[in-house]
Amino acid sequence: MNAPIALDLRRSRLFFRSLMLAASEAALLATVFVLAWQRNWPLDVPGFDVAGVPFTHYLPTVRLVELFAVVALGAYTLAGWPGRERLARGPHKAFLVSLLALWALTLTSALWAMHRGLALVHAAHMFVWVAFALMIACGDWSMPRLAAAFLGGLLSHSAVGLLQVALQHFVGLGPRFGELPVRPQDTWASVVVAGSVRLLRAYGLSGHPNVLGGHATVGLILSFGLLIAWPRVWRALIVVVWVITWTLLLITFSRSAWLAGAVGSLAAAVLLWRGRHWHRQTLTGALTLLAISVVVAVGFLAIFWPFLVGRIDVASQPYETFSVSERRAMIDIAGQVIAARPLTGMGAANFSSASRELLGYPLGWVHNVPLLVTSELGLIGLAAFLGMIGSMLAVGWRRWRSRSISPWQALIGGSLAALLAVMLFDHYLWTAPQGALLWALLIGCWMTDARSR
Image (cartoon, rainbow, N blue to C red; front, side, top):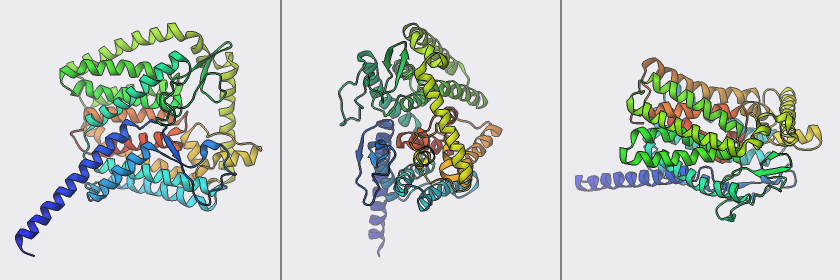
Protein backbone atom coordinates (compact mmCIF):
# COMPACT_ATOMS: atom_id res chain seq x y z
CA MET A 1 0.00 0.00 0.00
CA ASN A 2 1.55 3.30 -1.10
CA ALA A 3 1.79 6.37 1.13
CA PRO A 4 -1.09 8.45 -0.38
CA ILE A 5 -3.57 5.56 0.01
CA ALA A 6 -2.42 4.91 3.57
CA LEU A 7 -2.78 8.62 4.38
CA ASP A 8 -6.31 8.69 2.92
CA LEU A 9 -7.28 5.63 4.97
CA ARG A 10 -5.91 7.24 8.11
CA ARG A 11 -7.86 10.42 7.43
CA SER A 12 -11.01 8.42 6.80
CA ARG A 13 -10.59 6.55 10.06
CA LEU A 14 -10.01 9.77 11.99
CA PHE A 15 -13.07 11.36 10.36
CA PHE A 16 -15.20 8.33 11.16
CA ARG A 17 -13.94 8.32 14.75
CA SER A 18 -14.70 12.02 15.15
CA LEU A 19 -18.14 11.51 13.63
CA MET A 20 -18.94 8.65 16.03
CA LEU A 21 -17.73 10.62 19.04
CA ALA A 22 -19.92 13.56 18.02
CA ALA A 23 -22.90 11.21 17.59
CA SER A 24 -22.17 9.64 20.97
CA GLU A 25 -22.07 13.03 22.68
CA ALA A 26 -25.32 14.10 21.02
CA ALA A 27 -27.04 10.89 22.15
CA LEU A 28 -25.53 11.34 25.62
CA LEU A 29 -26.98 14.84 25.92
CA ALA A 30 -30.36 13.51 24.77
CA THR A 31 -30.08 10.76 27.41
CA VAL A 32 -29.42 13.30 30.12
CA PHE A 33 -32.30 15.51 28.93
CA VAL A 34 -34.89 12.69 29.17
CA LEU A 35 -33.22 11.00 32.14
CA ALA A 36 -36.24 11.05 34.46
CA TRP A 37 -38.92 10.57 31.78
CA GLN A 38 -41.28 7.63 32.27
CA ARG A 39 -41.85 7.13 28.51
CA ASN A 40 -41.59 3.42 27.76
CA TRP A 41 -42.73 0.69 25.41
CA PRO A 42 -43.84 -2.81 26.50
CA LEU A 43 -41.72 -5.74 25.36
CA ASP A 44 -43.02 -9.14 24.38
CA VAL A 45 -40.24 -11.41 25.64
CA PRO A 46 -40.56 -15.02 24.40
CA GLY A 47 -41.02 -17.48 27.26
CA PHE A 48 -41.55 -14.76 29.86
CA ASP A 49 -43.94 -15.90 32.61
CA VAL A 50 -46.47 -13.05 32.62
CA ALA A 51 -48.81 -14.80 35.07
CA GLY A 52 -46.06 -15.10 37.69
CA VAL A 53 -45.26 -11.38 37.80
CA PRO A 54 -46.28 -9.89 41.19
CA PHE A 55 -47.36 -6.51 39.77
CA THR A 56 -48.23 -5.47 36.22
CA HIS A 57 -45.76 -2.57 36.28
CA TYR A 58 -42.97 -5.16 36.65
CA LEU A 59 -43.66 -6.44 33.10
CA PRO A 60 -40.78 -5.98 30.63
CA THR A 61 -40.49 -2.53 29.04
CA VAL A 62 -37.81 -0.49 27.34
CA ARG A 63 -37.50 3.16 28.36
CA LEU A 64 -36.85 6.12 26.09
CA VAL A 65 -33.81 7.05 28.14
CA GLU A 66 -32.35 3.57 27.61
CA LEU A 67 -32.73 3.87 23.83
CA PHE A 68 -30.72 7.09 23.79
CA ALA A 69 -28.15 5.52 26.13
CA VAL A 70 -27.76 2.52 23.80
CA VAL A 71 -27.22 4.84 20.82
CA ALA A 72 -24.54 6.72 22.78
CA LEU A 73 -22.89 3.44 23.73
CA GLY A 74 -23.02 2.10 20.17
CA ALA A 75 -21.44 5.20 18.66
CA TYR A 76 -18.76 5.29 21.38
CA THR A 77 -17.94 1.63 20.71
CA LEU A 78 -17.64 2.26 16.96
CA ALA A 79 -15.24 5.10 17.79
CA GLY A 80 -12.98 2.51 19.44
CA TRP A 81 -13.97 3.21 23.06
CA PRO A 82 -11.28 5.90 23.66
CA GLY A 83 -9.94 6.24 27.18
CA ARG A 84 -10.41 2.57 28.11
CA GLU A 85 -6.86 2.49 29.42
CA ARG A 86 -8.06 4.60 32.38
CA LEU A 87 -9.75 1.52 33.82
CA ALA A 88 -6.61 -0.62 33.74
CA ARG A 89 -5.12 0.18 37.14
CA GLY A 90 -5.70 1.23 40.73
CA PRO A 91 -9.15 2.17 42.05
CA HIS A 92 -10.43 2.51 38.50
CA LYS A 93 -9.68 -1.15 37.83
CA ALA A 94 -11.45 -2.07 41.08
CA PHE A 95 -14.38 0.04 39.91
CA LEU A 96 -14.50 -1.88 36.62
CA VAL A 97 -14.21 -5.29 38.30
CA SER A 98 -16.87 -4.47 40.91
CA LEU A 99 -19.38 -3.30 38.30
CA LEU A 100 -18.79 -6.32 36.06
CA ALA A 101 -19.00 -8.70 39.04
CA LEU A 102 -22.28 -7.12 40.14
CA TRP A 103 -23.73 -7.47 36.65
CA ALA A 104 -22.46 -11.05 36.23
CA LEU A 105 -24.03 -12.07 39.54
CA THR A 106 -27.31 -10.41 38.52
CA LEU A 107 -27.34 -12.39 35.29
CA THR A 108 -26.35 -15.65 36.98
CA SER A 109 -29.01 -15.23 39.67
CA ALA A 110 -31.62 -16.18 37.06
CA LEU A 111 -30.50 -19.79 37.63
CA TRP A 112 -31.95 -19.88 41.16
CA ALA A 113 -34.50 -17.03 41.06
CA MET A 114 -38.18 -17.76 41.70
CA HIS A 115 -39.04 -15.79 38.56
CA ARG A 116 -36.17 -16.21 36.11
CA GLY A 117 -37.65 -13.82 33.57
CA LEU A 118 -37.59 -10.91 36.03
CA ALA A 119 -33.94 -11.60 36.86
CA LEU A 120 -32.97 -11.72 33.16
CA VAL A 121 -34.86 -8.51 32.37
CA HIS A 122 -33.18 -6.78 35.32
CA ALA A 123 -29.79 -7.99 34.04
CA ALA A 124 -30.57 -6.50 30.61
CA HIS A 125 -31.44 -3.12 32.15
CA MET A 126 -28.36 -3.31 34.33
CA PHE A 127 -26.09 -4.04 31.36
CA VAL A 128 -27.11 -0.69 29.87
CA TRP A 129 -26.38 1.37 32.98
CA VAL A 130 -23.13 -0.45 33.78
CA ALA A 131 -21.82 0.10 30.25
CA PHE A 132 -23.07 3.69 30.43
CA ALA A 133 -21.12 4.32 33.65
CA LEU A 134 -17.94 2.88 32.13
CA MET A 135 -18.37 4.99 28.97
CA ILE A 136 -18.72 8.15 31.07
CA ALA A 137 -15.64 7.19 33.12
CA CYS A 138 -13.55 6.72 29.98
CA GLY A 139 -14.66 9.74 27.95
CA ASP A 140 -13.79 13.43 28.03
CA TRP A 141 -17.24 14.96 28.37
CA SER A 142 -18.16 18.58 28.97
CA MET A 143 -19.75 18.91 32.41
CA PRO A 144 -21.30 22.31 31.59
CA ARG A 145 -23.07 20.74 28.60
CA LEU A 146 -24.23 17.75 30.63
CA ALA A 147 -25.48 19.97 33.45
CA ALA A 148 -27.29 22.28 31.01
CA ALA A 149 -28.99 19.32 29.29
CA PHE A 150 -29.98 17.91 32.67
CA LEU A 151 -31.49 21.22 33.76
CA GLY A 152 -33.30 21.52 30.44
CA GLY A 153 -34.98 18.20 31.13
CA LEU A 154 -35.94 19.34 34.62
CA LEU A 155 -37.56 22.46 33.15
CA SER A 156 -39.86 20.24 31.08
CA HIS A 157 -40.80 18.37 34.26
CA SER A 158 -41.34 21.68 36.05
CA ALA A 159 -43.75 22.96 33.41
CA VAL A 160 -45.83 19.78 33.68
CA GLY A 161 -45.44 19.30 37.44
CA LEU A 162 -46.49 22.83 38.36
CA LEU A 163 -49.61 22.48 36.22
CA GLN A 164 -50.40 19.09 37.74
CA VAL A 165 -50.33 20.49 41.26
CA ALA A 166 -52.27 23.62 40.26
CA LEU A 167 -54.96 21.68 38.36
CA GLN A 168 -54.85 18.64 40.67
CA HIS A 169 -54.89 16.18 37.81
CA PHE A 170 -52.71 15.15 34.89
CA VAL A 171 -52.14 17.69 32.11
CA GLY A 172 -53.15 15.35 29.30
CA LEU A 173 -49.89 14.77 27.43
CA GLY A 174 -50.54 11.04 27.63
CA PRO A 175 -48.36 8.02 26.85
CA ARG A 176 -46.67 9.75 23.92
CA PHE A 177 -44.72 11.89 26.38
CA GLY A 178 -44.88 9.46 29.29
CA GLU A 179 -47.22 11.44 31.53
CA LEU A 180 -49.13 9.18 33.90
CA PRO A 181 -52.92 9.77 34.20
CA VAL A 182 -52.66 10.80 37.85
CA ARG A 183 -55.57 12.17 39.89
CA PRO A 184 -55.71 12.63 43.66
CA GLN A 185 -58.74 10.35 44.04
CA ASP A 186 -56.91 7.39 42.48
CA THR A 187 -55.67 5.02 45.18
CA TRP A 188 -52.45 4.30 43.29
CA ALA A 189 -51.51 7.98 42.89
CA SER A 190 -49.02 9.49 45.33
CA VAL A 191 -50.63 12.23 47.42
CA VAL A 192 -50.25 14.17 50.65
CA VAL A 193 -53.23 14.37 52.98
CA ALA A 194 -54.67 16.98 55.34
CA GLY A 195 -57.80 15.68 57.03
CA SER A 196 -60.01 14.38 54.25
CA VAL A 197 -58.29 16.43 51.52
CA ARG A 198 -55.90 14.60 49.19
CA LEU A 199 -53.34 16.76 47.37
CA LEU A 200 -51.63 15.38 44.28
CA ARG A 201 -47.84 15.55 44.38
CA ALA A 202 -45.85 16.67 41.33
CA TYR A 203 -45.07 13.84 38.90
CA GLY A 204 -43.96 15.83 35.88
CA LEU A 205 -43.13 13.31 33.17
CA SER A 206 -41.58 10.89 35.66
CA GLY A 207 -42.93 7.68 37.14
CA HIS A 208 -43.11 8.91 40.74
CA PRO A 209 -42.60 12.15 42.73
CA ASN A 210 -39.71 10.58 44.66
CA VAL A 211 -37.89 9.84 41.40
CA LEU A 212 -38.49 13.38 40.20
CA GLY A 213 -37.39 14.76 43.58
CA GLY A 214 -34.09 12.89 43.43
CA HIS A 215 -33.35 14.22 39.95
CA ALA A 216 -34.31 17.76 41.00
CA THR A 217 -31.92 17.56 43.96
CA VAL A 218 -29.02 16.61 41.71
CA GLY A 219 -30.01 19.33 39.24
CA LEU A 220 -29.93 21.98 41.96
CA ILE A 221 -26.43 20.97 43.06
CA LEU A 222 -25.02 20.78 39.52
CA SER A 223 -26.62 24.07 38.49
CA PHE A 224 -24.29 25.84 40.90
CA GLY A 225 -21.43 24.84 38.61
CA LEU A 226 -23.04 26.73 35.73
CA LEU A 227 -23.62 29.74 37.97
CA ILE A 228 -19.90 30.06 38.71
CA ALA A 229 -18.57 28.85 35.33
CA TRP A 230 -20.76 30.55 32.75
CA PRO A 231 -20.31 34.19 31.63
CA ARG A 232 -22.05 36.87 33.68
CA VAL A 233 -24.70 37.41 30.99
CA TRP A 234 -26.05 33.87 31.60
CA ARG A 235 -26.04 33.88 35.39
CA ALA A 236 -29.46 35.52 35.77
CA LEU A 237 -30.93 32.76 33.61
CA ILE A 238 -29.33 30.10 35.81
CA VAL A 239 -30.82 31.72 38.90
CA VAL A 240 -34.29 31.64 37.31
CA VAL A 241 -33.86 27.97 36.38
CA TRP A 242 -32.62 27.23 39.89
CA VAL A 243 -35.72 28.84 41.44
CA ILE A 244 -38.03 26.83 39.19
CA THR A 245 -36.20 23.59 40.00
CA TRP A 246 -36.23 24.38 43.73
CA THR A 247 -39.99 24.94 43.54
CA LEU A 248 -40.36 21.64 41.70
CA LEU A 249 -38.40 19.83 44.41
CA LEU A 250 -40.62 21.28 47.12
CA ILE A 251 -43.90 20.30 45.45
CA THR A 252 -42.76 16.71 44.98
CA PHE A 253 -43.15 16.47 48.78
CA SER A 254 -40.34 13.90 48.72
CA ARG A 255 -38.80 13.61 52.18
CA SER A 256 -35.92 11.48 50.91
CA ALA A 257 -35.13 14.11 48.25
CA TRP A 258 -35.29 16.94 50.80
CA LEU A 259 -32.89 15.09 53.09
CA ALA A 260 -30.66 14.28 50.13
CA GLY A 261 -30.59 17.96 49.17
CA ALA A 262 -29.34 18.93 52.62
CA VAL A 263 -26.72 16.16 52.71
CA GLY A 264 -25.55 16.77 49.15
CA SER A 265 -25.31 20.55 49.52
CA LEU A 266 -23.25 20.21 52.69
CA ALA A 267 -20.95 17.65 51.08
CA ALA A 268 -20.48 19.84 47.99
CA ALA A 269 -19.69 22.85 50.20
CA VAL A 270 -17.04 20.89 52.11
CA LEU A 271 -15.44 19.61 48.90
CA LEU A 272 -15.41 23.12 47.41
CA TRP A 273 -13.66 24.32 50.57
CA ARG A 274 -11.13 21.50 50.41
CA GLY A 275 -10.42 22.34 46.78
CA ARG A 276 -9.92 26.04 47.67
CA HIS A 277 -12.82 27.22 45.52
CA TRP A 278 -14.61 29.47 48.02
CA HIS A 279 -13.79 32.87 46.56
CA ARG A 280 -15.85 36.02 46.07
CA GLN A 281 -17.82 34.83 43.04
CA THR A 282 -18.59 31.44 44.60
CA LEU A 283 -19.69 32.98 47.90
CA THR A 284 -21.85 35.57 46.16
CA GLY A 285 -23.58 32.90 44.09
CA ALA A 286 -24.12 30.62 47.09
CA LEU A 287 -25.54 33.41 49.27
CA THR A 288 -27.84 34.53 46.45
CA LEU A 289 -29.27 31.04 45.99
CA LEU A 290 -29.57 30.56 49.76
CA ALA A 291 -31.56 33.78 50.17
CA ILE A 292 -33.87 32.89 47.30
CA SER A 293 -34.36 29.35 48.59
CA VAL A 294 -35.41 30.64 52.00
CA VAL A 295 -37.97 33.03 50.50
CA VAL A 296 -39.47 30.30 48.28
CA ALA A 297 -39.47 27.80 51.15
CA VAL A 298 -41.32 30.23 53.43
CA GLY A 299 -43.96 30.72 50.76
CA PHE A 300 -44.24 26.95 50.33
CA LEU A 301 -44.69 26.48 54.08
CA ALA A 302 -47.37 29.15 54.23
CA ILE A 303 -49.39 27.55 51.43
CA PHE A 304 -48.96 23.84 52.16
CA TRP A 305 -48.43 23.71 55.93
CA PRO A 306 -51.53 21.53 56.67
CA PHE A 307 -50.20 18.89 54.27
CA LEU A 308 -46.66 19.11 55.63
CA VAL A 309 -47.80 18.31 59.16
CA GLY A 310 -48.73 14.78 58.13
CA ARG A 311 -45.45 14.31 56.26
CA ILE A 312 -43.46 15.33 59.33
CA ASP A 313 -45.62 13.89 62.14
CA VAL A 314 -46.62 10.58 60.55
CA ALA A 315 -48.43 9.40 63.67
CA SER A 316 -51.04 12.13 63.16
CA GLN A 317 -51.99 10.97 59.68
CA PRO A 318 -53.35 7.43 59.03
CA TYR A 319 -52.26 7.55 55.39
CA GLU A 320 -48.64 8.21 56.36
CA THR A 321 -48.81 5.75 59.26
CA PHE A 322 -49.83 2.99 56.86
CA SER A 323 -46.99 3.90 54.51
CA VAL A 324 -44.41 3.72 57.31
CA SER A 325 -45.77 0.42 58.65
CA GLU A 326 -45.67 -1.06 55.15
CA ARG A 327 -42.03 -0.07 54.76
CA ARG A 328 -41.20 -1.67 58.10
CA ALA A 329 -42.88 -4.87 56.91
CA MET A 330 -40.68 -4.78 53.78
CA ILE A 331 -37.57 -4.50 55.94
CA ASP A 332 -38.71 -7.47 58.07
CA ILE A 333 -39.27 -9.57 54.94
CA ALA A 334 -35.87 -8.56 53.59
CA GLY A 335 -34.31 -9.83 56.82
CA GLN A 336 -36.11 -13.15 56.45
CA VAL A 337 -35.00 -13.47 52.81
CA ILE A 338 -31.37 -12.77 53.72
CA ALA A 339 -31.52 -15.30 56.55
CA ALA A 340 -32.91 -17.94 54.18
CA ARG A 341 -30.29 -17.38 51.44
CA PRO A 342 -27.45 -15.29 52.87
CA LEU A 343 -24.85 -15.90 50.14
CA THR A 344 -26.80 -15.74 46.88
CA GLY A 345 -30.12 -14.10 47.72
CA MET A 346 -33.45 -14.81 46.03
CA GLY A 347 -32.44 -13.56 42.58
CA ALA A 348 -32.38 -10.14 40.96
CA ALA A 349 -35.76 -8.33 40.87
CA ASN A 350 -37.31 -11.16 42.89
CA PHE A 351 -37.91 -9.45 46.22
CA SER A 352 -41.66 -9.11 45.57
CA SER A 353 -41.88 -12.74 44.44
CA ALA A 354 -40.12 -13.82 47.64
CA SER A 355 -42.48 -11.71 49.78
CA ARG A 356 -45.47 -13.35 48.10
CA GLU A 357 -44.00 -16.75 48.90
CA LEU A 358 -43.61 -15.79 52.57
CA LEU A 359 -46.80 -13.78 53.11
CA GLY A 360 -49.22 -15.08 50.50
CA TYR A 361 -49.32 -11.65 48.83
CA PRO A 362 -46.57 -9.53 47.25
CA LEU A 363 -44.96 -6.42 48.68
CA GLY A 364 -43.22 -3.72 46.65
CA TRP A 365 -39.47 -3.13 46.73
CA VAL A 366 -37.90 -2.59 50.13
CA HIS A 367 -36.96 1.09 50.42
CA ASN A 368 -33.26 0.60 51.09
CA VAL A 369 -30.86 -0.23 48.27
CA PRO A 370 -28.10 -2.04 50.26
CA LEU A 371 -30.77 -4.17 51.96
CA LEU A 372 -32.51 -4.81 48.64
CA VAL A 373 -29.24 -5.79 46.94
CA THR A 374 -28.41 -8.18 49.78
CA SER A 375 -31.86 -9.80 49.73
CA GLU A 376 -31.71 -10.33 45.96
CA LEU A 377 -27.99 -11.04 45.38
CA GLY A 378 -26.84 -12.09 48.85
CA LEU A 379 -23.67 -11.12 50.67
CA ILE A 380 -21.66 -11.75 47.50
CA GLY A 381 -23.71 -9.13 45.68
CA LEU A 382 -23.39 -6.73 48.60
CA ALA A 383 -19.60 -7.19 48.53
CA ALA A 384 -19.52 -6.26 44.82
CA PHE A 385 -21.77 -3.27 45.49
CA LEU A 386 -19.56 -2.09 48.36
CA GLY A 387 -16.50 -2.68 46.18
CA MET A 388 -17.91 -0.16 43.70
CA ILE A 389 -18.48 2.36 46.52
CA GLY A 390 -15.02 1.65 47.95
CA SER A 391 -13.27 2.35 44.65
CA MET A 392 -15.06 5.69 44.44
CA LEU A 393 -14.04 6.54 48.01
CA ALA A 394 -10.43 5.67 47.18
CA VAL A 395 -10.44 8.14 44.28
CA GLY A 396 -12.06 10.74 46.51
CA TRP A 397 -9.49 10.21 49.27
CA ARG A 398 -6.64 10.68 46.81
CA ARG A 399 -8.11 13.98 45.64
CA TRP A 400 -8.82 15.04 49.23
CA ARG A 401 -5.20 14.46 50.34
CA SER A 402 -3.76 16.32 47.36
CA ARG A 403 -6.47 19.03 47.47
CA SER A 404 -6.87 18.48 43.73
CA ILE A 405 -10.67 18.69 43.72
CA SER A 406 -12.02 20.72 40.81
CA PRO A 407 -15.30 22.65 41.21
CA TRP A 408 -17.20 20.13 39.08
CA GLN A 409 -15.75 17.20 41.00
CA ALA A 410 -16.89 18.87 44.23
CA LEU A 411 -20.44 19.24 42.89
CA ILE A 412 -20.48 15.70 41.53
CA GLY A 413 -19.28 14.46 44.92
CA GLY A 414 -22.09 16.37 46.61
CA SER A 415 -24.60 14.89 44.17
CA LEU A 416 -23.31 11.39 44.92
CA ALA A 417 -23.61 12.03 48.66
CA ALA A 418 -27.22 13.04 48.01
CA LEU A 419 -27.91 9.80 46.12
CA LEU A 420 -26.26 7.72 48.85
CA ALA A 421 -28.72 9.30 51.29
CA VAL A 422 -31.59 8.48 48.92
CA MET A 423 -30.43 4.85 48.80
CA LEU A 424 -31.19 4.46 52.49
CA PHE A 425 -34.83 5.50 52.08
CA ASP A 426 -35.82 4.56 48.53
CA HIS A 427 -35.17 1.92 45.88
CA TYR A 428 -35.41 3.52 42.41
CA LEU A 429 -31.63 3.93 42.04
CA TRP A 430 -31.52 0.12 41.80
CA THR A 431 -34.92 -0.84 40.38
CA ALA A 432 -35.78 1.87 37.81
CA PRO A 433 -33.69 2.57 34.68
CA GLN A 434 -34.16 6.30 35.22
CA GLY A 435 -32.64 6.10 38.70
CA ALA A 436 -29.94 3.61 37.75
CA LEU A 437 -28.79 5.74 34.80
CA LEU A 438 -28.69 8.82 37.03
CA TRP A 439 -26.42 6.88 39.39
CA ALA A 440 -24.35 5.66 36.43
CA LEU A 441 -23.94 9.18 35.08
CA LEU A 442 -22.63 10.53 38.37
CA ILE A 443 -20.33 7.65 39.27
CA GLY A 444 -18.86 7.75 35.77
CA CYS A 445 -18.24 11.50 36.04
CA TRP A 446 -16.70 11.03 39.49
CA MET A 447 -14.25 8.38 38.31
CA THR A 448 -12.87 10.42 35.44
CA ASP A 449 -9.59 12.22 36.08
CA ALA A 450 -10.13 15.09 33.65
CA ARG A 451 -9.18 18.30 35.46
CA SER A 452 -11.28 20.42 33.09
CA ARG A 453 -14.37 19.02 34.76
